[in-house]
Length: 509
Image (cartoon, rainbow, N blue to C red; front, top):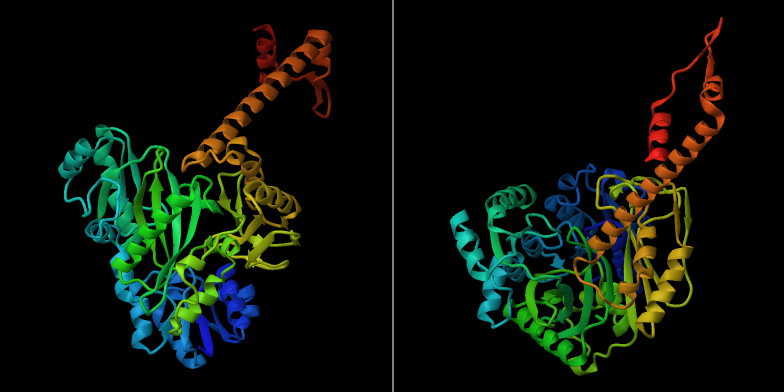
């Protein structure tokens, strides 16, 4: 077993891994940028080392600086968390070359699954169902037009090296294809340094469901059930739950077996996630594989009773999986909300700043994975994820009830958060009935915006009518007298304002 692990990350996931290390009697080493000197993960670690300026490319993405700290601190393994270098094959290989164990898959497995087009090719060879489309990058607009005509509109353009919605475009009609392809390529190049874009059939109102797998280094691979990840905003997950409300035992087994086949085809080890799109007839298609621990791993931990970070560390140290597929049992239901420092009333703009007050929820069935504390200043340099709030119950209704209660207890002062968004989601009748898909949240937010516009128009009309009534009751002479203003030597009537004229017209219309 490792004696010291370096966590090459920050925020709530770094705190999560540090806690797992301490539970296992392993020393934890933190790294931090200049703006993260006072962060919670730095406070929780046994040792902490600065690695440079706030810019991620000069700190958390700087492979050599992180390996230098590993050497100086005597760390014998590195846990990458998620984001940053967690899916960087060069980093995994650099760790191996430096004699430091990378807690994750091998560089070869990461490269095999890191490109969506290469992954599609591998899955086709393995007989895994994929969404109809191309398994190589598009060479020309003419090729895109030919493929789109064959598989039928709407189609989706996707960056081969993509993630988080970058380099992705939904195309509804042929006239939109050329410009969409150009913009997708441009964004892919800016975001990933790779302009390769492929095309696939757009599944209408799909669900996004993923299967958690674990594979040791002795050839054993298991699946740990699925997670429903359909609630997304701009292709970013917002709420996740396990198990999926629509997956029955037979479908779970079939998806799990495919996920295991995907992992084995890639020679995959450690924790990973196989993502599927599911259509309205419950047909599922391979989407991609995430070669790391997922943000939403706590919901799987709660329904299986397993600690995925402990298992990651044990697998990386050479241990075999301590259980078989038949021993994996699912119990209860768990739902996770991602708490962001962003303003839902101002187009979800990031909201950095000092946390002046923090009231935390607790009670039965509530888990918090957090990287914040009262008095901490949230920097503007990184992803705005602050914490994850997870509710667990014997069934979905109890999980929703507990999570709703916890959200009502949660308060973060000094900055804006999206907590109010989750209250709205959990109270929605369609969500409670599990009538969700990847477009659910966009529809919910659009309905709210339209409702706000209608309410604002009604308030404007009401004010105008009241003003017009006052104007009519007072009469023009009294109204004019009421608007006399002093100029120092004499008073003179002010001009009737434009809003009053508008109010009169509104009252007469």
